[in-house]
Amino acid sequence: MSFPKQFTWGVASAAYQIEGATSADGRGPSIWDDFCNTPGKVFDGHTGEIACDSYNRYQEDIDLISDLGAGGYRFSISWSRLFPDGTGEPNEAGFAYYDKLIDGLLAKGIEPWVTLYHWDLPSALYKQGGWLNPESPEWFARYTKAVVERYSDRVTHWFTLNEPQIFLGLGMNEGTHAPGDQLSRKEVLLATHNALLAHGRSVQVIREYAKKAPVVGFAPVGCLHTPATESAEDIEAARQATFGIDPKGWTYNYSWYCDPVMLGHYPEVGLELYGKDVPNWSERDLEIMHQPLDMFGVNIYSAGIVRAGADGNPELLKSERGYPTTMFRWTINPSSLYWGPKFLQERYKLPVVITENGLASMDWEHLDGKVHDEGRIDFLTRYLAQLRRACNDGVDVRGYFQWSILDNFEWAEGYALRFGLVYMDYQQMRRIPKESYFWYSKIIESNGGTIPADLAQNPVTVP
Image (tube, rainbow, N blue to C red):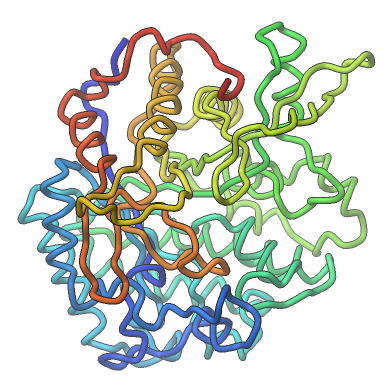
C-alpha cells in the first residue's frame, strides 16, 4: 500500500495569483488586471496587484518549498510579463525574473514544472479578439518558442493550457471570470477551437526547440462523476456521466476538450449537441490539436455521484441535507481521486499527474501564533488514500501537486478563500506554515507511507 518509487510530490501556484507587481519592470496588463479593475466583478474589490508579492519574495517561497521537501513546483509564466503587448518586443526584465526563480528552485533540488498559460491573456491580445482571433494559435506558438528557447536548458516538464473549460466557459460564456464576456455558444466554440489549436502548436514548438528532452502535458478539468456503489452498472453509469456533455453546463466537460487533443477527433455527443454552432474545421486542424503527449495533468477537487437508473442511464444522486462541502461549496468526495484518474487513463491512455487538489477553507492565525487547519489534513488524508488505491490498482499516476503552496488571490473570490499550506498575512506579507504544511512534509518524506492503511476502502463521500 504505497506510491510508486519515482513519484513526484509537489506543490502548485499560478502567476497572477501570487506574483503581484502587476506594473513592475515593464509588465503589461492582462485580462485579469482589467477584470479586477471593473467594479463588482471580484469579491470586495480585491485585485492581484500585490497578491503574495512573490515577484519580490520568490526566494522566501523557494525556501518554503524546499523546507517542505517537495520534489516539484508547478508554476505558470505571466505572458504579459514577458511580452507586454502579447507579441512583438520581449521584456528582458520579465525573462530575468523567471531565470532567477528557475535557478533558485534548481539550486534547492526542486524540479520546475512550467504551465505556459494559466488564464492571464495579455490585454493587448484581447483587444485584437483574443481567442476568437484566428491568429491566436500562432500568438501562443511564438510565445511558447520564446519561453522554450530561454528556459529549456533547465526546464523539462511543460504544460500548455490550464483548464480551458474555465477560462473559456466562465470567462467567455458566463462572464464570471476574465474577460467577463457573455458570448453566444457559436463564438465560445470558435474560441475553444482556436485554444485547442494553440495547444497543439505549442506542443509542436516545445518538441522542435527544447534543448533537453521535454515531458509535455495538458491540464484540463471536467465534470467528473463517481459511482454510488461498486456494482458494474453504477461504475459504467459514472463513466458515461464523466464523458457526457450536460446541455445546461455545456462548457464544462472532458470530452469536447480532451478527445481532439488525445484521440484526434471531436466527440459525437458534442457534435450532435452543438449542431450548427460547431465551427468549421478541417482534418489538418485535428492533426495540429492531436500531438503526442507524455502526461495528462488532472485537476480534481470534487465529483458528482451517480447510479444506474432503471433505464441504465446515469442518474445523479441528490446530496443529503447537510452534506460536507468546502468553502467553495464543492462536495467533499475523496473517491474522486480514485475514479477520476482511473476513468481518464482508461479513455486517454496517458500517465496521470494530479496537477491540482486541495481544500478551500477559512484559516486564521490562532492566539498561539499558529494556524491550525486539521480540516485540511483530514481532507487530504482521505483524498490521498484514494489516490494510493488507484496506484495500487494499476493506474499509472506519476505525481501529485497540492494546491497550493500559499494562500493566494482566488480569482473572482479574491482573498476570501484560503487554499494554502502556508498562511498569508496579506497586510504584512508574513508567511506562516500551517499544520498541514508539516503534515504534508511527512507525507512526502514517507512517500505516502504515513497515510493510514485502513483508509484503503472506497468511501463514497465523507460520513
